[in-house]
Image 1 (tube, rainbow, N blue to C red):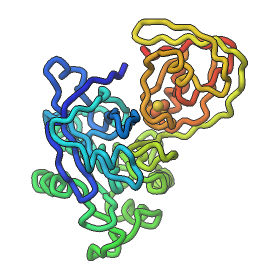
Image 2 (cartoon, rainbow, N blue to C red; image 1 turned 90 degrees about the horizontal axis):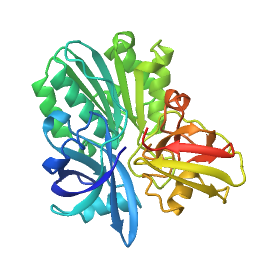
Image 3 (cartoon, protein in one colour; image 1 turned 180 degrees about the horizontal axis):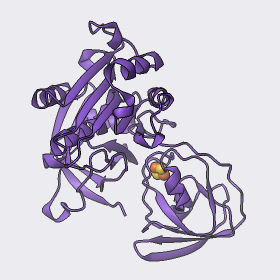
Length: 360
Ligand code: FES
């Protein structure tokens, strides 16, 4: 299970006027806990103005880089992102959860694959990690990136992307798409909308020869690109995506997968058993409005969470007995739901007795 540890900040880099990347010092004793896969994210916890705030941010480096670094773009009224951009400094300590997330496909060095990546704004963060790792570890694979921004000055990681282009001339193709600055070609001017996706998939890559698509950015871009690709015959299973605009204002960094909502069925005085770190606690959920996560926290159980908005998956647990319904689900895949996983921050008991395990 993912766990928080206190890590000190080893470096802060201004990537653009409104984005910083933050690297953490990981002590040797915790190296294994913080090993990550490209595309994963970290949940950070800080006390800001006396209140505990948790946010999730994607790792922006490759596992081969030998550092743990996330990028944080300042969003309007974003409590954590403003704090990170304006106040954090090298040497400060933050509670950092061990890496989680499943926005990746396995690296297969012996295979030559084609990847197409769509990113907009800070959606580049996990895409950067994926792109770097694929290029470095799969020497026969190609990567085509479409990256939307307002202006060239907003392009996060532009220097690193240009370095990769120079290093992997034959295998990386980068297409910047700008909305507020004409880049010299109409094809790359404007939003990554249906028309653009159509043109890209007609002129710049052959959709049916691509092994994996990774999409990260606002919901509109993801839905549009995915639907154009599916209409062209691309298998849904090859299209992986993460949302960077939140369904609730609480979330500043991350993400969405398949939406899945149910109306809660109200069960009076359900008996809830929570298994966490091999310890079992049982209690009666008296307030039927309360979700399983909140009810467990009110019992003093130190259950993991970050967004409480059905997005980050930190509160994931497995239903071992009984049934539960989720108000929202932007994080679990259909397969995970079938396997019995729930987002406890969204889950309400549907049966008189429910057993959930955070250890599975
Ligand atoms: S705490 Fe983020 S999905 Fe439940």
